[in-house]
Image 1 (cartoon, one colour):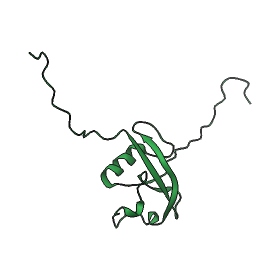
Image 2 (image 1 turned 90 degrees about the vertical axis):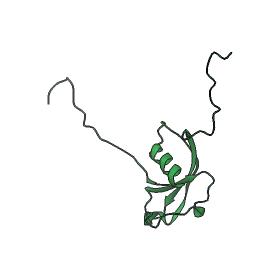
Image 3 (image 1 turned 30 degrees about the vertical axis):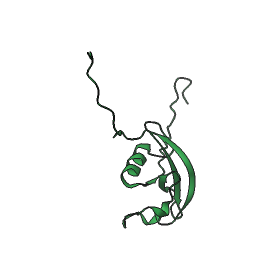
Image 4 (image 1 turned 60 degrees about the vertical axis):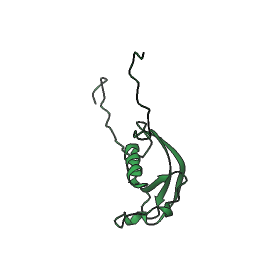
Length: 113
């Protein structure tokens, strides 16, 4: 007699991957624009749409075997967007993302000038 119901065999998971290794290629025209492909994939073997950013028509290797993890930040990259694009198209077209800010200090206490 089985006390707990038998669980069905788990088949292939539809759960998206949690890690991804990519190769980054930088535009020769605009250095902030990148093309990312799964690590080891030749970008010349990928079919791109005709409306791909023209700046990405001429790229050169930038960084190889970059390890990304969902939910973990990566300097200059929108990790979730890269995961989604590569999952949907086999590549990701994106730009370096850097937010900077300057804050003015306010004097607290001390003599007034």
